[in-house]
Image (cartoon, rainbow, N blue to C red; front, side, top):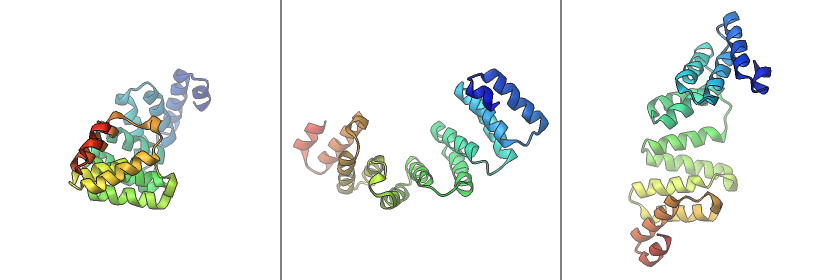
Length: 192
């Protein structure tokens, strides 16, 4: 199956992974690789069950746990995403990726103090290699908590650390809004 996938022959890869599962239905990797085939076709109705079957075959199968976390996170099902994140963290080797996952999940579920605390831990641990988007997340969190002073400090740091090619329109809008909340209306106009 792997050899066929390298040749971009999904049909034969599918047949081989299916045959492997006929011989041994508990092969988590075969379920996962079938899921990858269907994911490349953007067919969540087929790939999600394959990743779930991989986890049923091996509850610590890290690649499928991560795929399921990502699927449910981006689908907006944060309760399900958290369950898979917790399983992933328990099974995977420790890494900063898990801290980013936690920070993101805290943010989207409006647990702003936890998101800030986790982001600051990542920044402390990673130093200059921390992703600048953390500062933007911190700014949004403080803004949601009506602390425009700390929010402005965080977005200013974001703008000094992020590559300008990665800026999006909302970044400028947030900074302008925070400047306005901090009685810096002239500067806010420039950012708007």
